[in-house]
Amino acid sequence: MILRDLHDKARQSLDPAHYDYVAGGAGEERVLADNERAFDRYALLPRVLRGGAERDTAVELPGAPRSSPVIVAPTAFHRLLHPDGERATARAAAAEGAVLVTGTASTTAVAEVTAAAGAGPVWFQLYPHPRHEVTRALVGRAEQAGCTALVVTVDSPVFGRHTRDLRHGFTDLPPGYAAENMRGLPGAPPGALTDIPMSPAVSWRDLDDLVRHTALPVLLKGVLHPADARLAVEHGAAGLVVSNHGGRQSDAVPAALDCLPAVVAAVAGRVPVLLDGGVRRGSDIAVALALGATAVGVGRPVVWGLAAEGEAGVRRVLAGLRDEYDHTLALCGGRRNTDLTKDMVVRKGGTW
Image 1 (cartoon, rainbow, N blue to C red):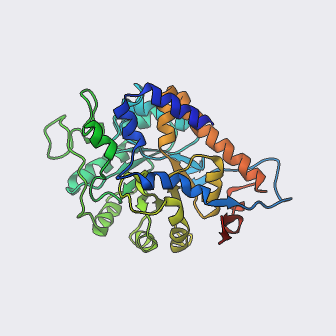
Image 2 (image 1 turned 135 degrees about the vertical axis):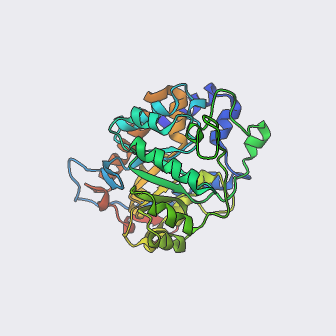
Image 3 (image 1 turned 180 degrees about the vertical axis):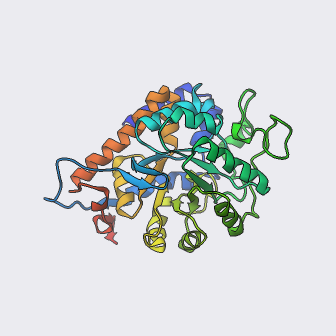
């Protein structure tokens, strides 16, 4: 109910083009819808008489010990949605003990985001640039800013085709807004902006180069195939995010949740596996963790909270989901996240 109310309030307050930029997906938006519907295909089979009065829901993540099981997934252009933009999101995430993944397409530079987060953990999301010197400069900025991990988006060889954006003609930021992390990079005049290109030529060799040139743990975001999960670990990934980009890239892929069990099996506990896409309830978090996820990311709900109520709205989203999850964990007879196991998830119409 909290998320629905914040969504409705955000929709009323936003320019329709900006609302559709966040809300929309690729193509006919089948994957966008299926990410949420996927959770309706699963039910929890509780255990009884083994719970406790207090529960520990903290998770261990690269560069972020004892964090909330709900992280803020990378989303772009927060200043389009609220004047305080990414700074408000950072303050809210830190206050709720949640990892914030700030992105290449942030409208606030990474150093300002980490300053707003204070001691809160911040990861930096990166689109590998075709020019290695640009990628390395972005990584250097994230390192200098105090980010504790990198999240490399690997599901974007080309831009997704967003029907709603094309209808609005929303193809660039309005005057006064910019992807500030792309300012003043190698090969550009001082203070000038470099584009964020997608490149189908990015390969595992680029990941090898990135891992060699940073001391930060590197997670890959956008992995759906178990074979790629195994390759990622072999190439030095410190974690994976099972994600279809919130339905914003291909409109012909499975829901992220449906891909989670096979990726978890392929990784076999060697690195943490996270999930994002379609998480809207505490019970969704419980299903994902029971199927092997270490944590979940939420994107659109955070943005709706920001647009509706600024920092306070983001806190309501993160606190509400965490509290709903804690309640669900208690109802399932759990005292800690690992008490949720695969045998406690029933696929409606049959079991695993």
